[in-house]
Image (cartoon, helix red, strand yellow):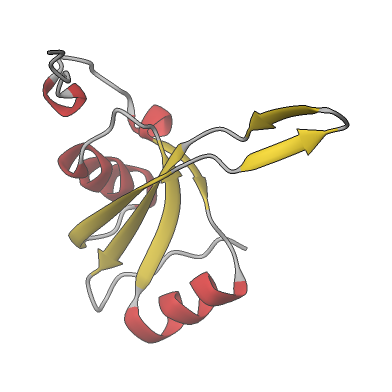
Length: 105
């Protein structure tokens, strides 16, 4: 019987620019940010919610209320006869305070 290692409790120290990989700028994301003040980011897979919150607050100088995360599985892809998968990644939804805003443009 194998035991899964809890990767969120490691002593790995990530810098803020290593935690936040990129913002996810889509039509749905922009609508959510305008209506609910929730922004989406691709984040490091080992980063926890507290690390993500601190990184966003430091990088963008905003007040974060809460963070929700999703682990996205890679999709199957084909190249000719060979098959493979795209990489798995982690997505974070960050809710900001009413007075805080992030401009990506």
